Image (cartoon, rainbow, N blue to C red; front, top):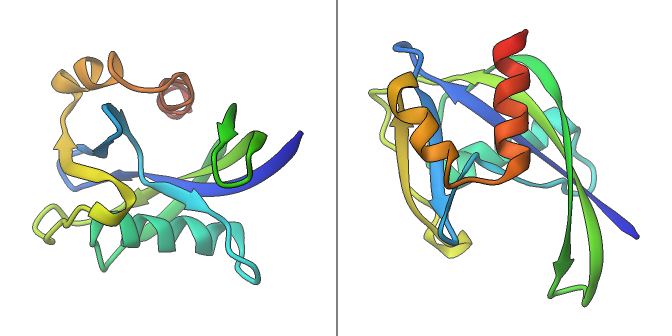
Length: 136
């Protein structure tokens, strides 16, 4: 099975809210595929910027990796995605703009009270990496 490398961020603001995106009927975190010639960390920052419109992002630390398998319609085969996740900081006053060409419908800063509701309509790997982050 082919492995696709991706990277993204758990982006928190000064109030401790997590930036979540909504696409394809699920709440997700910003991430995307590694481009040739870039580091994993560069990929994570680029993808977060592209998908959210944020301009100023600070990488704090590497959190971990998640894995999930799916059928890639472009490759016409089953693939495994290996996603590398970083804790990041951004300012909530900065304008956020969903990357609609990637199917992102909305972006929200989510506080701890509302997080479980969003995670009930998310992917297992997203729940997994957020739980791992909270245990660090």
